Image 1 (cartoon, protein in one colour):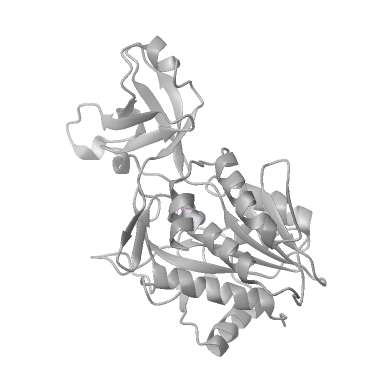
Image 2: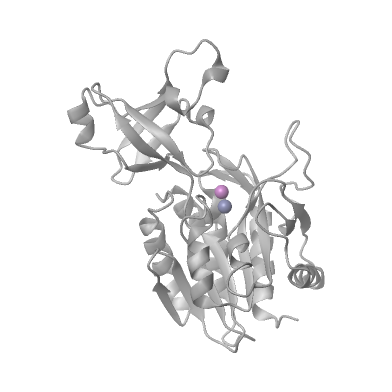
Length: 329
Ligand code: CO
Ligand code: ZN
């Protein structure tokens, strides 16, 4: 899965501009499912047909990024966040636009660093005038972080592990599933999660699933003076109990735990105090959908260098494979 995570992590795909990621995924998954299709918002569906009820498994394609709000007469570019991104994380970082244009971020003179906010940040793409800048970038253009993927022993470091690690797991499981399934499974690669779970809303409505699962990253409490959280890298994928978008359905959560125990797959129980996943949208679709989330522990979520553990990724794929291939209670 390593080279897959590398390619997906390095791909360009801020919220609303998931086309490149979608093309990459569709090419890779289509031979492993009965059919693929997209909807009006750009969600990608990859369906394995089987008996009802359908299991919807969702991972989001979009990543956090920025949008151009203003270009000044000297060609400096002002930005606003698209998704949860802190301005101080961008200082000295490179950003990349869809056409490959790259720039570096710095800030105006500050009396104190705590004055730093989005209004003080600017992007320099090396243009000497507004006209020169506008040949490459226009107001409303989106950019993502520009960071190469790296393997650090058993850990992967890169941008957009949130949620390309999840996309890679869905793809890997689609490849491994047996020819006969106890129920139909639809892998959904959703759009616009980072701006409010929007793709998952229309995807769940369309599929009308019997069960929902999101596969996404979660925060950890294992770094120096981290906020208290009982999740660590390398101790297995997390089975979510609660976050700000959903209380996991007890039957789904119980089934996930039983399945992990039966297969000897390590897991952690997750309570995420702030944050949500696609399952937050799926579980309140139509008359309600029993849903859960399989989480990949991740350090430095929503920064240019997100870190996940290779063993956690492998175990998450193993658990998702079991969850797709076993009849649900
Ligand atoms: Co996120
Ligand atoms: Zn995410």
